[in-house]
Every structure is written in C-alpha cells, then in structure tokens.
Length: 495
Image 1: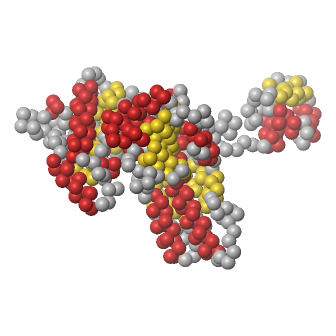
Image 2 (image 1 turned 120 degrees about the vertical axis):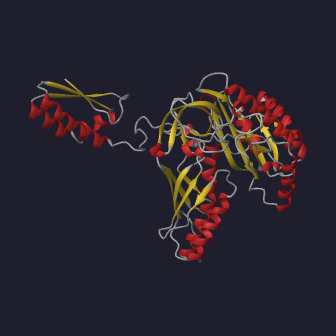
C-alpha cells in the first residue's frame, strides 16, 4: 500500500509543533509550549473543597490555580489496595464503579479530561484511563471493548479472541484502540503489562503524601502524537532536531520497533515546514476568512459561548447553473473545508454554521451527509443537528484542549478583545463631554487634556469650534497634550 501520510516535528527551545500531512496537504496540526504544557490526561490526588448539589458537581483542589470541576455522577468509589478483602472483594467502604457521595475534605484520585478554559477550571473524572499504544487500561471498571473505528468484522472477531487470552486482573477493564488493528497477542500483552506496571506505580505514589499533588504527568506533545496517530499509513516521520530525533527513535523502538526505519532526521538549512510548503497554510489558520478553490469563502468567528461560521459564494462563477445548484455546490465544498478547519484549529463546544439557503430537501439531506462524512475522520466527538429552514446547522465538537488561536494570541491591549476601537472622531466627542463635566465640578483657570495624537488631531481640527466654546463658557484655558503611548480610547484631564 502506498504511504500517503507524513508526520513533521519541528523543535524549538520553547515550543514543539507537530504537523500531519495527507498527500502533501495539512491534515492535523498541534502546538505545545514548554511554559504552557497541557494538563489533559494528568492524574492527581485531589481534595474536595466543596460540593454544590444544585449543579450536581464538586470542586476539587488539585494544586492548580483554579479548582477542578467534577460532576457527582462522574465520581465512583475507588477501591484501592487497602479496600480489597482477603477474598478479593470490595470492603464495606464502597463498591467499584458505584456512584459515590462526596464531602468536603475528602481525598480522591482524579484525572483531567478537559483543560482549563477561560474562567473555568479543569474538568475532572474519577474514571481513570491509561492509554497505551494498543489498548487503554481502566483500573476501576470491569469493561472490555474494541474501538468502533475498527469496522472490519473479521478483525473485530480476531481481536475479541485475543481479549479472551489476555491476562487482565480482576476488576480491571480494557479497550482495544484503533491502532491495534493487525496487532498480535504478544504486542497487546506487552502493552498491557506496561500499563499495569504504570498503574501500580501510580497507586503507590498516591499514598506518599496528602492531597493535593500531581501523581502522573502524561507524555508531552510529540510522544502523545506518535502514540495516538502513528500507524502503517505513515510513510515518514521528519524531525529537525538531532536530540529530538534520538528521543523519538528510542520511543519508537520501545513500542513499535518494526516501524523505526520511517524516522528520519531533517538536515537541510531551509526550515522543515517551509520545505514542505505548510508554513503559510499554518499562518492562515489564524485568519477568520478561509478561501476555497471555487472562489467562495467561509468566515469563522469564535465568541465566548460558541463559534459562528458563515458561508459566502464570493467569486464563485459558473455558467449554465441555477441558483439552487450554485448554493449546493458551494455548501458541499464548504462543508468539507469546515470539517478540516474545526480539526486543525481544535475548535470545541457549540458551532453554528450559516450555509447558503437551499430550497430542495434532497440537497439539504445530501449536505448533512457530506458534512458528517467529512467529520468522520475527526478523533474528537461530534454531533450534528439537521439543517434548519434558515440554512443553519448546529453541532457540537468535543472540547479537550485550548484552541490554536488561544495558544498563539492574547486579547488586543487596545480593543480588549472586542476586535474594534472607537474612531478618533468619537473619542474626541467623548473628550469634550468629559471636559464639560470636569469644569462643572472644578474651579480652575487652566486645564490639560491628554489624549492620543490621532484624537488630538481631531480635537484641533473637526472639533476645534466645540472646544473653543467650552473654553469660553467656563472661562478656562484648555491645553491639548499628546501621548502616543496612551491607549487610543483613554482620556486624561487634569488642572
């Protein structure tokens, strides 16, 4: 089978970037900075700070800046070694997998399932899961399963037979991952043994001191991507750092030695991402407008509560085509690109898409089919609601990490995240109003108005007569001082 995919790893002193290419086109993109490491997957011994029954949740101190958020129905009794009786059953302290009544001051082992976002702390669970190369270990649950993405019935039957042969401890569950397709019993047993050893060390570490503290930190970005995305479809892994190359090679040889020959050190002077022609494409991920081959374009606008996407026909031109056919053609092309952009930008939460209106029901049904098909390769969970009469599609996409934009950008110091600032004309009007109010409450013969140079130009130009009238009315001399370091909307008035 022809290798279609490549993984590119760019190493900088403070940042790691991983790009996955499919037939030369950017398919997935991830960024992690050393000063902003993800906490997703980390395991903590936490302490319950308070329980809020009205929202069905508890706030758990894990030693982070903000307390974690744990739904009460997502908490289970954790039967640790000291809770098992001589016959191997659970003691009276609780039953594995049963809902647990939490109380303030209680300590428990929790895992992060969603990173902190905005004003919210990390989302937590007590359903611990440890992902390996081929399987996921679930220490507190007696559940076995095979990834739904493995859709070959013959392969599923083969893996079920292997599951029966695996030496899994009692009261421990396991899920076979997608990458286990084609894996042998020996490979799965070895992966399971490593996970069981890891869990044993986590249990021991959890008893060393009082909560809160970090017990286990998941792999960094590069190793996580290799663990989760590396399969037989990958042709090459290119790494532009000698040290990182050696580290990755050690990891590959430990878990998947038969694929180690695909790891390659990039030695050329031209930067790796530039050489592969994706640096410009990555920069475009930070733009709110995405142009399509047909001339149409989509606009992506994130808000605090949801992300809004607008589809526009733009310069789409095709002769001998009806308005309905044009709308369906643009919408179908947009649907595929929207699915890709959601994945690349790691957009999560509620998404509302305003497609071009279509009158025919069959086109509406086909559009949803195309969109869901484009989302099928997304590892994040998605749920698409049918298209409305207004042409709107509502969907949700699982949010686990911070968005790409939130990692690279901060709120503008000028507009404070609004995306706009007032015009100098408007600010000059505000300055005159503020000046009137100041002179009405302060008896003074001289007043200084300090503003940005652009505002000063408007005060001395379009608003000069208004400024002179205020000066005459209150009998005060008004001096305009400029300060280019001042925020454009800031106005300082003093005697």
